[in-house]
Length: 77
Image (cartoon, rainbow, N blue to C red; front, side, top):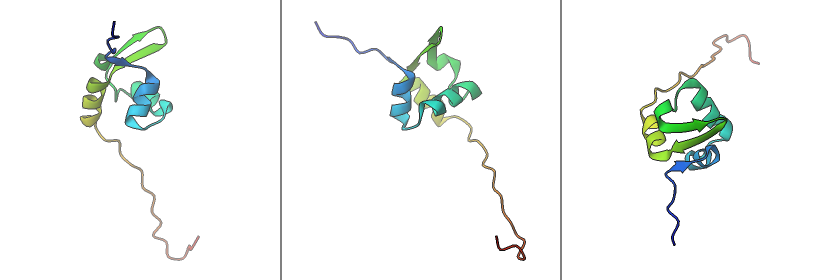
């Protein structure tokens, strides 16, 4: 009997798949970058549909980057 692979991945597998930390995946969950329709949550356990998560990340809005520039020529620090 062969085992059918599950279409759902753990949070660790999602992090490994996208080459990010588990903390990053948790941040994506908190801020809605990974939409609720792409995963199941039972208690504190998440299971993700990787193709749906990948599609959501491709279409996710990019977060703005804060740039700091110092144009003061007198300050060479």
